[in-house]
Image 1 (cartoon, rainbow, N blue to C red):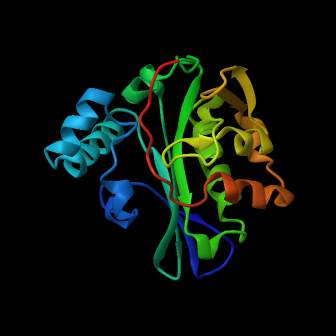
Image 2 (cartoon, helix red, strand yellow):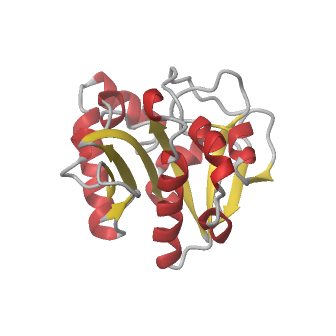
Image 3 (cartoon, rainbow, N blue to C red):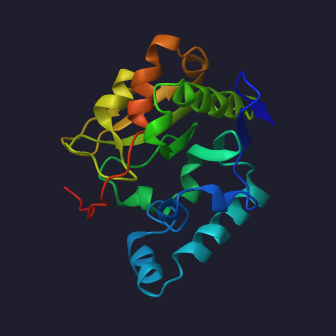
Length: 211
């Protein structure tokens, strides 16, 4: 179990046992976990939550942990989610796909607004980086969103660049960015605000169209 410096703060791997600790909109969101057609059908049929659980179950058994959940005094206050691109069907819908073969995809993350600017973003991202380095992964990539405001489930491209990601395939709306993981392990304390902004607040989900 990861810790975060004080008795009231914990960082633990995401499992089926603590999936219910994610915000309700996130534990029933399958934006990344299903292709667009299957995702729309799951939402229409009220099966999003069960599809999310099935996705995490398969990933845990076939690849291992795919996220971290942060707690303060026993209450969940943030999470980060990542996976190999083969497990992220929505990635294929992006004009800048595919994610590089040597990288894992940073899918999404969140920190409760009242707990931002407390170092949680840096701690969660460093834990993710150390986990992936331990599995022999070289880099992490993400699809950024260059629009403002940025929608939920898509990470802001400018915030990704602010914490060290570099554009590896440009696009006016959906650039793909990359971070070498050994750089992530040494994220500095003065980057905490940028990392909290990267994982910050809920926004509406957009329709995704190819350009």
